[in-house]
Image 1: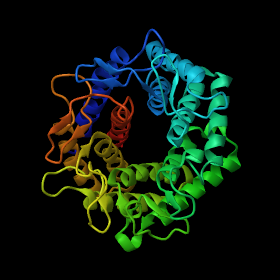
Image 2: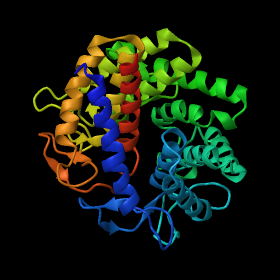
Image 3: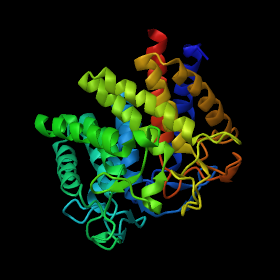
Image 4: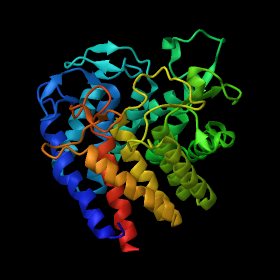
Length: 391
């Protein structure tokens, strides 16, 4: 496991020779623009609806590769055509980003989902770096401003919850802002960046991270920060908590706070030990902090993004703190992930396994899985391993 040179090559090769060619070849809509994400095992399109957050994620991914790996024109062209489709059809004219569109770009679902906004901001922010296009930068900045204005009510008028009875706040938005703020820091005022970073660190590490629960993170708390004994209040998503920890590690590096990095590394390990399926291996999708039955029927599935994000957090923890326990867990999660999610016959990775680790859906993309977690994870692990090997 300590031959980091071999591991570096493994992650790099998988990204550049398997996963990225799959999306370049199969996902681009040459007629209407944007990307197909509903792709079967071989890459055939099985549904043409376009989901805004997956459009944004793919624009970001190819822009990031162009900016950080190599100035390949096909990568930039892929990002630009997706961005032009998103710019034209993805919002209501005031940068309220829809959830989904028809293939041609007609709105299907209203802008209820704040993550359509976050990934649009990420997309146009990264693409503005690649192109120098001020319009793209302005779209990212305006969208970020709307996100901040909606922090206390992310779903806006589309919120189904009756007001006032059980007002909960969720982990997802401060978590994603921890990453988004660094992603578009080049477009934001210094004061906004510093204020948002501090707020995110406080929310993630002091509100949703619960020492009284053994140091795990809950998905929802009451408005005053107390625990809620309800389905939503008991919900734990180990993958979410672990993914957030590498965002926090990045903030720790940015702010030169080694104690924050150490705490994020420790939280990664605690959450992983809590969420690991000791009978079949892999990480549970959802758990209940009291161990009572969940309302999420898919609670025991093993999902691609949970495992890929865990690999990143473990490697970063080892790189930044020298934690041998992180390295040991990385080997365990690496072995499980590569042996279960990688399709040995066709390109890209499976996303959904049952509890026993058997393929549940043999799609490569759908409504929720697109060109994001697998390639981003492969890139992150490649670069971290490369740095460890060089050191």
